[in-house]
Image 1 (cartoon, rainbow, N blue to C red):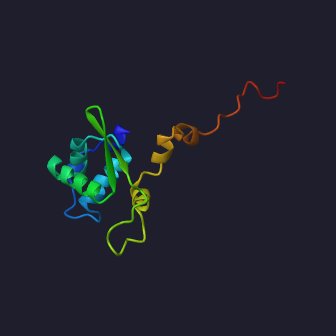
Image 2: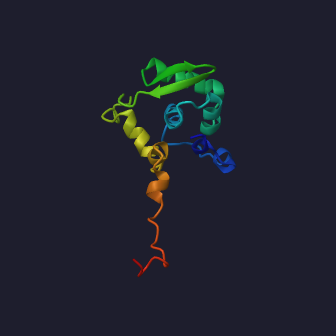
Image 3: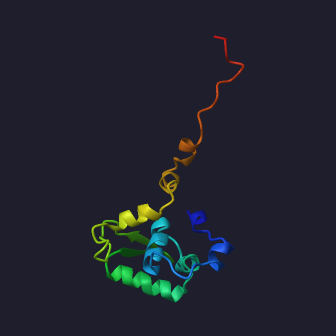
Length: 133
């Protein structure tokens, strides 16, 4: 899962001056993709400070969009996917719809270990085995 969080140098330095989604959405999407992600890694991926990520996570927790569970020295987050989006224009959709919009189409298969099975074509029949019974 961590490989999906990798950010190229060009993604970090060639950031557009504005985006369609807020930093709150970006943080939520990063956590949805990797519930055990370190906030430091989220900050790098989103392009904001770690402290800003901490404030956003706190906002998301207070609003019921995230739940944090401590596991040893790490946190594990659960995203409340059925929560409605907040703005009146998108309130008819829930967090799952946002995640589905942005999520890599192959990610669900990778999470369930099916990527290789679905991606690999069936084996071709062997030339040796043809015609023999």
